Length: 237
Image 1 (cartoon, helix red, strand yellow):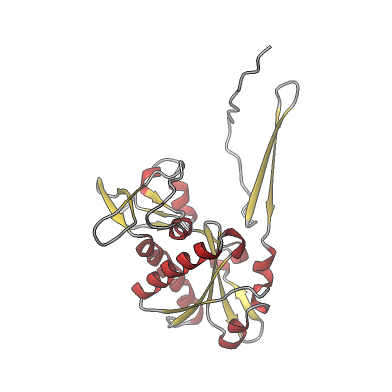
Image 2 (cartoon, one colour):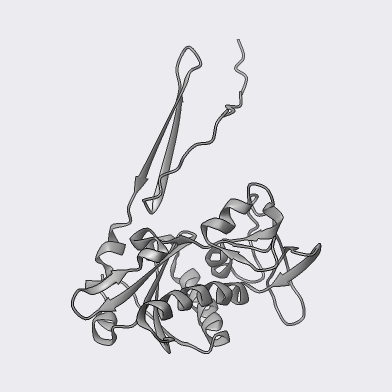
């Protein structure tokens, strides 16, 4: 007797946890075709411990932006308590790195991510992943609704739908600069002045050495667009 594949269709939305750096979803179906969905979250421990591991942070006390998956965290050094994650950026769990262009003013983070449900072609994301790839060998993911193109000056461009019924293209560095500007606004609001130098960190377990080099080049280019100096911090082995 053959076995046919079947599709599990959920009749109601699943509420994902607000806390957690990674989310695990497991689905089981019993002999009566009743499904059980278990959702749990996992924390990246090094994010909690990173500030004691980076000597450059202890010495310079720079505003800190850390990247993991498709998210980022912001932390500020407080004289009395050391580094603290910004609650306005969802604390140690961070904010999602999505930008949506379905309205006149771009939207960022979770608000932009929610736009995927109705207008996916207006949303860009996975900027770190795209930066990590060789410009002549971008591996397109099937869940992207934007497209990859290029021109004479830019070997990689993301092409997406834009408010007003037009299409626009932008480089990964330009889009990252847009997002970093949101980080800088949050930092300025917290410390009372615009920072001139920031510390950047990328979760090392997600990218090999060559990919990390390309990401750092892209982030440095984005910072140059914003006329701000950046230093990269690496976890001690």
